[in-house]
Image (cartoon, rainbow, N blue to C red; front, top):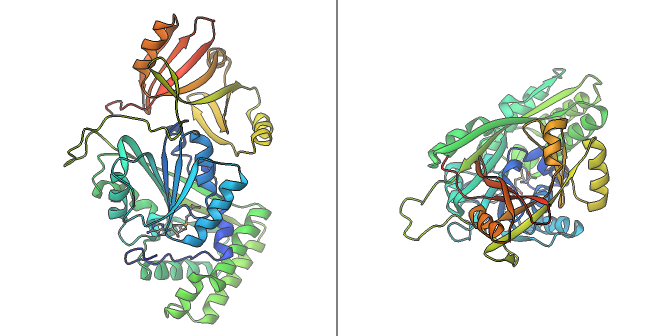
Length: 413
Ligand SMILES: C[S@@+](CC[C@H](N)C(=O)[O-])C[C@H]1O[C@@H](n2cnc3c(N)ncnc32)[C@H](O)[C@@H]1O
């Protein structure tokens, strides 16, 4: 599929997919995790082999994830990844981020990891991602920044690798130093509320060095990138072989260290889109039939488990669910979402309060929830309170059990 004046530089050679398959929501989309909760609908653009997609699907279930990629072959692998993990809330669609085949306001969250750097017009891509994101939703992107990558020791040949990569990627229509440009691209695309951040991968121990250097050595001589480099006249065959040898030499250095910095953006879609004629209401879009309780719609449930040792508990719950943990922090409390479980660990004071909450329920509207709860004799202990990602309340049911209710209505930020 054509991607409007850009060619995906890396292609999907095994040495490329080996790199993508190691990605998780925790190591590649941590900036987005606090915005995810059960019941949300997510579009993952440029999903590749779909390991991040699968984690997102586990986090928002029963909400649905739609995964799009320009390559039909890699979508097959992504489909298999979701099937292996037993996920039934992901669908896969071949498509182009510059012309997404979905109506306006289709998704609560629109996400792209390491995609905008490969697109000929990243500003147009962000505009298109915004078009399909509902008002009150969030558009998230993360991209590497090759000029900011750093390594030690300074093995001769790796500077040539970076120089060659810059030339090949730009000749293909991409921008390898995308990380630093994401915020500017989002503003040019018309987003007024953009939060920019950064995070990095670091490869240093023996196993990581071997993995990272092998895949780059192989990619440099055997992938689409290698063909683009040689056939495009950017390097002679001997040069790419010399660069591959430099990668292997770096990998063999016991003191080796490699930093891959990324820029990240979270763009909140505000109000009614200019020119829109339809009435837009703040909403969550359940893809599975909601459970009805009077006027309240329960869209999903997270079971909260308070633990002393978060690392040990993660091991146990990952084995129970087969899902990979997505870690995040809520103030002084460390948390990890593992399948339907939310593991919480922190200082005694906050934990004493959190221990009393049985589960977190995602609802369409906490005001409706409050009215229904009062009608059945529940006591509202706190809220509705606006938070950065929506509103919540805590209620004690007539039987004494305490629940948190959350929605995603706009907070006016
Ligand atoms: C570097 S990979 C990232 C894959 C995945 N997001 C991840 O991080 O593991 C980039 C992916 O974007 C896809 N892609 C490139 N240009 C695209 C476009 N214009 N529209 C949709 N997908 C595109 C490629 O086919 C590739 O699978």
